[in-house]
Length: 231
Image (cartoon, rainbow, N blue to C red; front, top):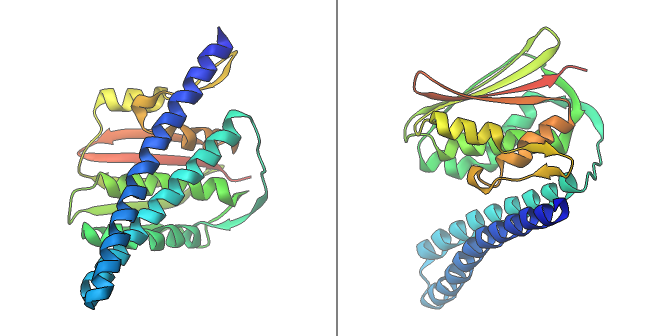
């Protein structure tokens, strides 16, 4: 019974990923065909536009494949943890730089308030995955021309990174789904497709680092707080 449930959950996850990956690949294929035609016509502006769209879709596909790899490692408890000093501000700048096009498209204003010399002792890949996913969601659900606040500070024995955005605010039902997406039982990791494909793995990645993520909706803001242990 337990094995059948695990197989069903993995099959469901793979089907979701296949669907998610197929869409950008079809877009890349279409834009590539258009680019070839415009090259023949010498329409430089259109070629640049198509190439930018191709790059966006390639970045999206890469992220999906990285999520699939992370899911596999989590599911089968394969962790290649390397603990190093991480400059949190530098990591966040790198994440934001990769999302520059999405930020500009919605004309968002990023308000960065990171405590000076805030350094985290942890695994870079896992921390980057967590922060990348949370900021990406904040951008996706932010209203155009709005602010996204990214605040990092030390409180007692924790480093807390808070991301706030205004726009499509999470309902109580949404919050319950997000906070319930990871379940533990004798059969191990369990996935709920209703919560999207990124958040379950991000919550588990945080748990691997002995950290936690808290999701809230308050005063018109979505607020995500990531609690990292200092040591």
